[in-house]
Image 1 (cartoon, rainbow, N blue to C red):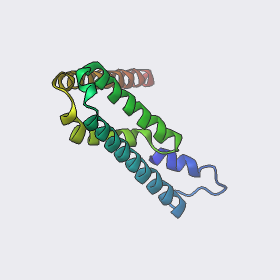
Image 2: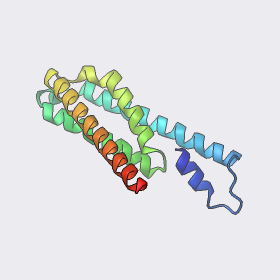
Image 3: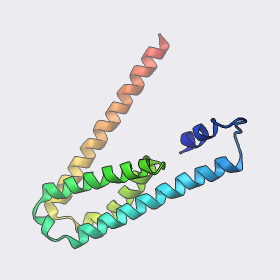
Image 4: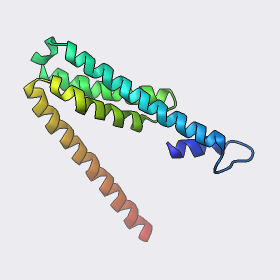
Length: 138
């Protein structure tokens, strides 16, 4: 959020580090991303609560969660907001409300799937940081 705010202001004739426009843009992006994430999470949780027929298909439940996550990110980026922040608040709402609407096999599968994806992403970040640190020393 902060990077996009400052890079947005660098196009002006006299860029300033602190101005009303920078603070306004920062709050617009932050609050807009919060609103998109909460709205998408609430809508997704409501849909999962009402869709009783999907409980027979755990793989479709997990796929729908992943698709809703991607659509939240993409929609937020399309609006010029922070997709990461929207996805963060989307995940908070899903963890709070949607987890209890899932079937038992989907609860287990989603926990395993998302923890595996989190560990893989964390490993990639640390490998990337290690490679960058090693290359910058030489």
